Amino acid sequence: MKIAIIDYDTGNVRSILSAFENQGADVFLTNDKDRILESDGLVLPGVGAFAHGMKSLESYGLVDVIKEYVALDKPFIGICLGMQMLFEKSEEFGDTEGLGLISGKVVKLPTEDNQNEKLPHVSWNELNSKGVQWIDTILEDVEEGSDMYFVHTFVAQPQDNDNVLSTTEYSGYNFCSSVKRGNIYGCQFHPEKSGKMGLKIIKNFIRRCEQ
Amino acid sequence: MNKIRVIARIDVKNEFAIKGIHLEGLRRVGNPNKMALDYYNNGIDEIIFMDAVAAYYDRNSLSELIQRACSDVFIPITVGGGIRTIDDIRNALKSGADKVAINTRAVQNPSFITQSSEVFGSQCIVSSIEAKFISKNRWEVYTDNGREPTGKDVIEWAEHVEELGAGEIMLTSIDKEGTKKGFDVGLYKSVAQSVSIPVIASGGMGKASDAVELLENADIDAIATASVLHYKIETIQEIKNTLLQYQIKVRI
Figure 1: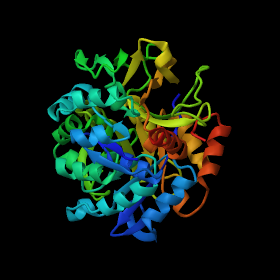
Figure 2: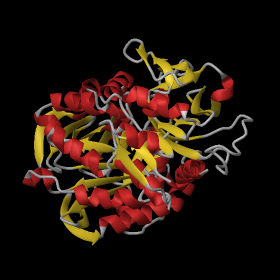
Figure 3: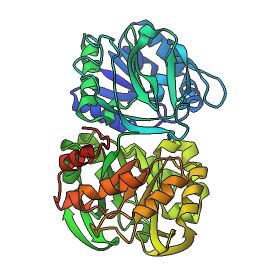
């Protein structure tokens, strides 16, 4: 069982790599098409600006590779910006097209309730299920209200509520903090930086890759 | 209100964790990697490693330490001290750091903050500001670990680094640093009112109730402490329990 982490010159990938290693995965960094398609699980990391991330994926010719991989119905997870890029488009610096794997768009975190609330949202914050079953997903055995580490200014708004796996409240607004569509997952938070509960989510993803 | 982050600050000289008073008179307190792992296992929210002498000697040498920390500590890690080029930041992030703290270089060349936040995103650029009390409601910016006065006003500089693109401010009171006599509440209140990015208060905490006094009076997002943890004055859980008693939200 091998898990590939997409290497496209963005952010801190070493901590994702070591979190997966810590949980016993055979994991490697790559931007090679064949190695990606052969893997049993795929991780799309990412921090920073949406347009920059998409441009970087395109420059490595990875947009089509990711779509080809997803069509094989193997487990795929996008983390932080990687989750946002799963969607159709983002309003960050004008509209930018995303991977379009999940319907919906990415918008600036609304904070109308309280104009003084700070952005970016840099904080540990709670995952709420709002009645969504977490069994047999990457959030299996994660306790309701568990704290995860968030650093972001934009959030995804899935068109279909069925794709929302968890929500998190910031400044009176409940945003989508993780998504699921079939074997495609996304986390707005950083599971690799969220202590032992975050590692559990990574372990759950690894288990799905073993199936 | 956000959950307040409780951060362990570990100042490093060569391969040792060190601690001084007013950023001076440094003495060894332990192995930085062992300390980071211990704090992680006991519920700390974040770790900051500062190379205490890097700015002075014109180098940064924390790569190996960060790589080791990254293999067993799964919370955000910030590295600071001697960060002066885009390549320094890239190396720190490649080693496993999530954020870099920049002070001296930003004062010498403010556009460095803008350049680095454009390349890496403002979420990983922490502006480290060392402040020394001048007179009522006036503090001066210092660099090189509290050695060099700059003539800059702390509040104006804090506003400026936000405009330049810093994602957070780590504000250290040189007067209180290492004294364990409590935070300079006036300093943090003034700066937090002036900026809208998160502010980390560093320097002076001697017990959890010092953090309560600060957080009840200033809109601070995180507290960083060294002495309380290094000298085992209170445990991380004791600090968090005290904050919770005062209705200050923390990660449990």
